[in-house]
Structures are given as structure tokens and as C-alpha cells.
Figure 1: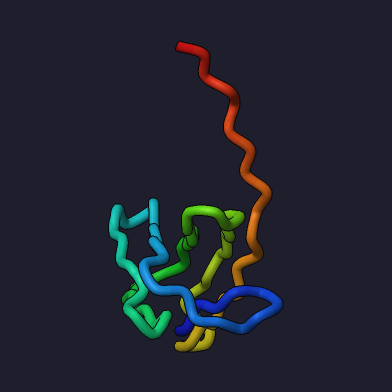
Figure 2 (figure 1 turned 90 degrees about the horizontal axis):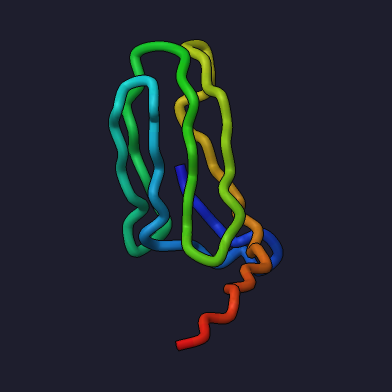
Length: 82
């Protein structure tokens, strides 16, 4: 599948895709493309810095291509006083 930004449609390289059930992970390439092989139903978690995580459950009868759009998240860091 391909991972893009919601709104602009720009591809997102370096997105981390995790499958906790099988303890496997992969990342999207420079064109936002990723590939992961699953033998049965599983959960996929898509994570990218500055964007909201996206979680989807995939079953064994799902389509072989899953395109995902991630939305940017408002991340506010707390102030650190030294």
C-alpha cells in the first residue's frame, strides 16, 4: 500500500508500520510505499512523527492493498526549566 498525508496527498516516507500480533514491523520507502505479509487476521499500527497514529484491523479476506492517509496531529511539548 501507499501512505499519504490527509489533505495534501503527499507521500510519507519513513512511516513505521507495526503488527503487534506477529511482532513484525516495516517502514514506508521514499515514495510512501510499504509491504507487509500477514497469514491471518491482525492489527496494523501506522506511526509517524508529528502525525496521529492510525490503527486498522485487517482480516485474512481483506484486499491485498491497503492505502492509508495520516492526519497531522497538534503536538505540544511541555516546557522544561533548567
